[in-house]
Length: 389
Image 1: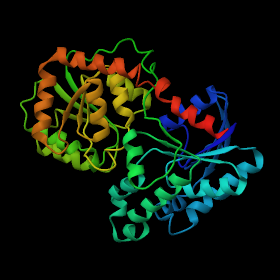
Image 2 (image 1 turned 120 degrees about the vertical axis):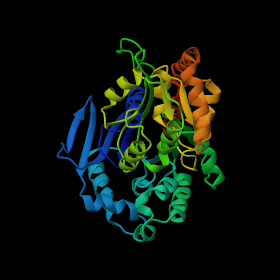
Image 3 (image 1 turned 90 degrees about the vertical axis):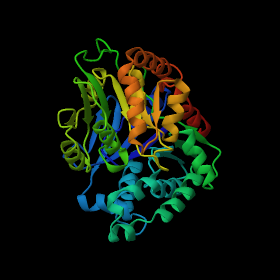
Image 4 (image 1 turned 180 degrees about the horizontal axis):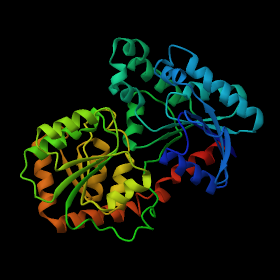
């Protein structure tokens, strides 16, 4: 079977897409990839045997994605790109990553009588609604949450195969009226061996390090963590590493400075994937402070499984999916997402009890190399494709 995966952004940047491609190829399928690029990259290349087609995208076209349901520019860009590839390759299925390009994928598949797979990484309508650029007057005109919800319901129901990242997401879609009998739940777990080349899993004994890696935006809840730290009597050797970038970084830096935490809170900036994992190994406690909403309740963050594989106890807010994983595997502690005092209470437990940190970390590791390994959780993806043959 020949599958064309379609990714809105450049490749390789998305860990999930890479793992899905590798898994499907290992199962005997031929996979090709179409993606856009904002850089001067080769428009065609073979990477580890994967044929990649790239099309340069202008800033203007990229920005029109927000208003794609009202103006044709973005969809036209992708429609012509995919049709060009279909002239060169015999394709049996098109696998669309994320919601925006669902209409393009479905219409092309219907026209050419090929299978349509929709892979929903995010709760897109809510994620878009949370984004600052949709809060302006123009943003509200261009992007309507109700319109995206109708769009999601339509194309999630029309897909020959639907892939979601969490059981909670599947239930959410069904509650919204999506009717699809071929749904595969494929969470953002990691391959069991991502730390095999690392010499050890131990933290820096000179410090107690709280670790966060990811986007630095308002809905990530990092302000709750910093507020909590400001109300604690922290050990002299305590430090909080924030790895990543985002529009909320200046606000958080100012907050840390005003709360006299500049010697405790460190913004390390963007790091490569390997650097992110290496820094994780040198930490003691890993935090997922996301604010609870309809998006964070229904999505599967990569970081929780990285934390578990690194044998780090997870300190997480009570977002539904994350809370279910933490409680099921006993890999950490949960606090109320918007409650600095509850965060303080749970962090103190982990700071003061090294043996508990070790036990929780070991519990997470055991789950992440067994039932929550990519090798195990990717099986529904393979089974979904078997139904398409």
